[in-house]
Each structure stands twice: as C-alpha cells, then as structure tokens.
Amino acid sequence: MAEQVINTLNTKRKEIEAHIGSLEQDLEQARRDLSAILAAIKVFSADGPRVTAYMNLSKLFPRHELPKMAQEALAASPDGISTVGIANHVIAAKGLDSGDRHLRKAIAYKVVQVMRRWEKQRKVSRNGKDGTAVVWIA
Image (cartoon, rainbow, N blue to C red; front, side, top):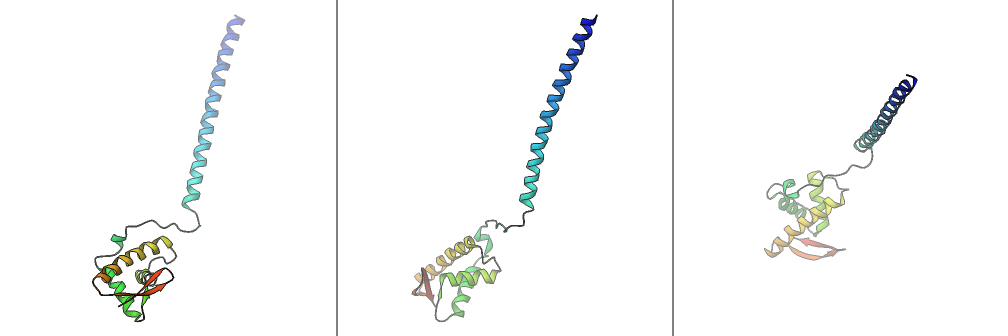
C-alpha cells in the first residue's frame, strides 16, 4: 500500500510541476505583451517632433487655385521672383508648415509645372537664376 501512495504522490508532483511550468510560460508571454503595449504607449504619446502625414497635392489645391496664387506672387514682385519664392508664398497663403522640406519641394515642383506651361503660352519669361531656382517675371 505504501508503494501505491508514493506512486500517486509522484504523479501528483509531476502534474503540479507541469502546471507551474505552464504558468511560467504564460507569465513570460504576459510580460512580452506588457512590454509591447508600453512601447506602443510611448510611441503614441511622444513629445518629439511631429511627423507630417504625406498628402496628395491635387486634393490640397482646388482647381486653378495654385495658378492664382502663383499669379499673386508674380504681381507682388515686379522685379521677378524665384520658383522657391513662389512656393514659399503658396505655403504661407495656405497656412502650411513652412519647415517641412518635403512639402516645400513638392509644391515647388508643382509651381515649376505651372510656370513652364505659362512660359510656353508666353505669359511669363525667365529672368536668370537665383542659386538653382529660376527667376520668373510676368
């Protein structure tokens, strides 16, 4: 009879050890989950520099708004204005982030398209360069 009791106790010991091992694995998984959640909280509550979401510029400017703004910039400077100057005027008029270099470059590219189209239509002409930017005159 003592042998049967010892076998039963050994079986129960193995079950409890297996259960403890399972609980330790669950505890490790819970710690990894908590670590991931804390990292996500840190990312979303960061006080660092704001990240600007990229946008479709065709949605930013209603039809013919960019050419009107370019025309206003040309009219404001009779001695000529560079492509970068026109782009800065457009960014200021729309109230956009002037520190975002990617946005500045994209808007300057759109301004170049407008100015080249007007150059073909003889509405504007090139008046030299300011660094690498073309200076336009109406």
